[in-house]
Image 1 (cartoon, one colour):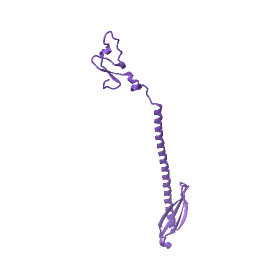
Image 2 (image 1 turned 135 degrees about the vertical axis):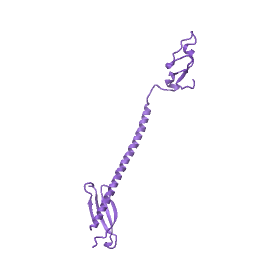
Image 3 (image 1 turned 180 degrees about the vertical axis):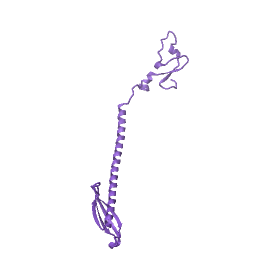
Image 4 (image 1 turned 90 degrees about the vertical axis):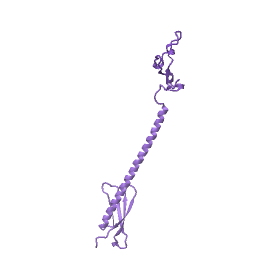
Amino acid sequence: MSMQSDIYRPITDMGALRGASKNAAPPAPPQAGGIALAGVTLLCLDPPRLRGGRGGGISHRAGFTLLEVVIALAILATALLVLLESHFAALSLYDASRQETIERMLLRQAAGMAETDLMAGNASGSGDFGKRYPDYRFSYASTSMGEETTAGLYDVLVTLEGPGEKRELHVLVYYMGSGE
């Protein structure tokens, strides 16, 4: 064979194609449509190399084996499992952070209500957040930080109760009073 590709072979012996002598057996027809012209080297496909087998080469059987399909499906299933797991973890993290944000917002809102009530003269109280957050309730209690009640600095403990755990927030409020 020459340096040509494995599935091609040159037709160079024109005498072999035409018959070396009149007494010789007629030559075999050119394989795979090869044409023999005088003085020209043509290439033709070598059908025995295409059949596969021991010599290797291209097989006429196309497609995938069952083992290849099963391995591909296993890889795909593993990738999908990892993607779904990370998706559900992200959803869980989103729900937890949303709940945390809502509770902190409600706690700050309750601290604002407690500060307003303290300025109105109420040292403690409780309430809810209406129809939008029916599961949440708050309460607060304030104590004076100074030795006298006229010192003006109060420690307000705000407590939020909801579906999750109980949360508390300490807020310092400075209020001089109405000047009585």
